[in-house]
Amino acid sequence: MTLRICVAQLNLTVGDMPGNAQKIIEAAKAAHAQGARLLLTPELSICGYIAEDLFLRPSFIAACNEAVKTVARETADLTDLAIVVGHPVGRDQRGKSMTVSERTNSASVLKNGRVVENYSKRLLPNYQVFDERRYFVPGQGTCVFQAGDISIGLLICEDAWFDEPAELATEAGAELLAVINASPFHLGKGYEREVMMTGRVRSSGLPLVYTHLVGGQDEVVFEGQSFAIGADGTLVGRAPSFEEKLFYVDVSRNGDALALKAETAPARAPESDLWDALVLGLRDYVGKNGFKSVILGLSGGIDSALVLAIAVDALGKEQVHAVMMPSPYTAGISLDDAREMAKRLDVQYDEISIRPEFEQFKASLGPLFGGKPEDSTEENIQARIRGVMLMALSNKHGHLVLTTGNKSEYATGYCTLYGDMCGGFAPIKDVVKTKVFEMARWRNAHDPYRTGANPIPERIITRPPSAELRPDQTDQDNLPPYEVLDAIIERYMENDMGVAELIAEGFKPEDVEKVTRLIKINEYKRRQAAEGTRVTHRGFGKDWRYPITNKFRA
Image 1 (cartoon, helix red, strand yellow):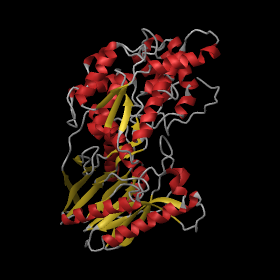
Image 2 (tube, rainbow, N blue to C red; image 1 turned 120 degrees about the vertical axis):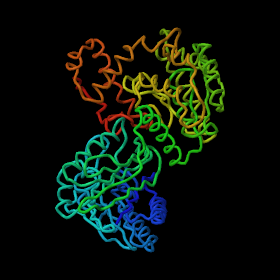
Image 3 (spheres, helix red, strand yellow; image 1 turned 90 degrees about the vertical axis):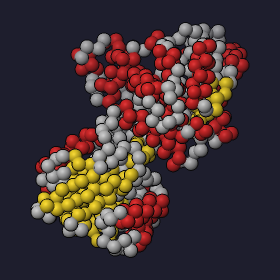
Image 4 (tube, rainbow, N blue to C red; image 1 turned 60 degrees about the vertical axis):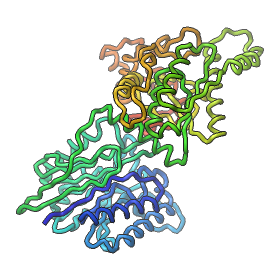
């Protein structure tokens, strides 16, 4: 006998319990029609992930309970189909707040219209972007259920990263492990999961099917890339990355052994994963929050060029508006390059000179400046005029303003609060400057969404970066070379290396001192920055929680 398992790699929306339930119902019907007798959906599929303090609301838990009942009722006639759905479980507190001890991260097995099994996650992650101990208590039991003639051991996410939950499932009679998961993307994470689960298969002796969420949720993005591993530790199937998919795994019995068969999507280059993560993160932030279009300032520089290319790939050219706002210091070639890129991608493009407003600001403030020479004050005025222009167009037309700053700038504060930081979403917030250049070259060599080949003019990539807020300005006037800057940021910010360790690695003490000082003193800016897609193992978001008032730096 063969058991067909359908892995429902779904893009779900936090808090949309009716919509999520309907997606699960439709997947169940499609799976049953294809002969599947087990449907696996991602972790917390009923409510979406990460729901944060919504888990504290009794009405949220109650709505999840009702959605589970809806899925059970609407799939009751799908004979012999077992459906695994993830959802929070908590006691009814009649409108009162629940304590942590009253909630678990759970999954139910539905069959013929009713709940036949329930399992609560045993191991709760509390690192990086995860805060599960704030919301849940660990489960205590195991869950082994029948699908066809095969005993399935159910695990949720973190449970599969450690030995004990799988060992307990094996002792309870499991013949195959089913793991439902919602684990945020960072570069390389999908293949790390496959390696880790290969180890789990080898330690347990059981084949494994791994179901993973896909889609964007605020700053995090999930890549899908569900997979199946045979009992010998061989990868037998992999679902595509960054797209919804019903992925089928056929399980056959040969004596006491189980054999798995599935289609396999090829492994991908890191640049492809990164691009798709940035595109999906932006697309879902725009779509799930009800925006119809975006607007950004196009400067003729590399950062805004990359953001424009991402936006067009994510939303299509009709939903993207680019505005060039030259100041007295904007080079003619910047205007030429901005016009050329807008033409290549065929987006709406406008130019608004900020010279009159800039001169008026200086005239109005001059008497109060007391004759002091021009400095960063005047530079920031230019950036803030542009911010006001973009926000006005946003208010009038309903666009979401995209900010164009990169991780190197957010780290060092090389951005203007209420100026170029104005906006609702920062697509490259977690991409350092050296990677910005790499991705610009990659996008010119690839056209994954068929929106336009070679969209970024070569001169934008080869020119020395400049904010163009004073004559002959370049970024490297005040910062170490980007190769050095980004290497220090990665080690200090992402990997928690100390100042002494950085100097011991060979970085110049003056560079280490400058960069680490800038990271520390610009925390107040980052607290006021827009959300942006997290693509490294540590971004300036939920997994970076440093105090603004802070005297420590080492």
